[in-house]
Image (cartoon, rainbow over all chains, first blue to last red; front, side):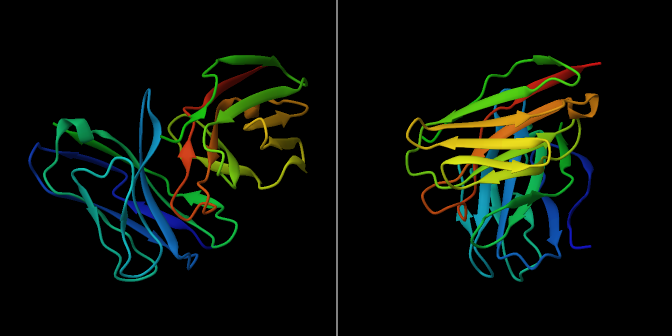
Length: 112
Length: 113
């Protein structure tokens, strides 16, 4: 079955370190997204991509970057991790047209 | 600033009854709306999508959309304990959803056996 997978599922890192979260989907969806979910804020969009070589900033993009070298992958990089970036991160992808969006299992990131 | 508003709950409903979840949105240009179910510690799971005014039914779920009132709702018939979860309402921008979705903070639903 087609799916979207994230790795790692859990990560603890230190303040100031660079961290990359992986996302891989096998649906061949053009649209991919990264969200973070925090208590009191709900899901907020970090970055999104319409396709290969395309990336766009979302609502809370400061301190994050993404790259899209192929259809399947959209890695999220935290350039210099901060405690405020402790969160649960969800990768998602959506179909063209209907934009039904499907989520990966999530990555719980703790910055100490 | 686009906003999607939901009552955080908890909403407590007896088993077998109808659970009614509501959502309002601020962006009149929003085209597409979605309901997700999220169990504690899990990822959001898409349960309904709706794009035009009126009702859309899928099994025990009915989504309702009123664009004039900027209102979306989800009805769950014959509620089961397994329906206990947080329900997230999400709306697109005028492009339909390619730019991502705006989510409400969710309504915590409890089905009482």
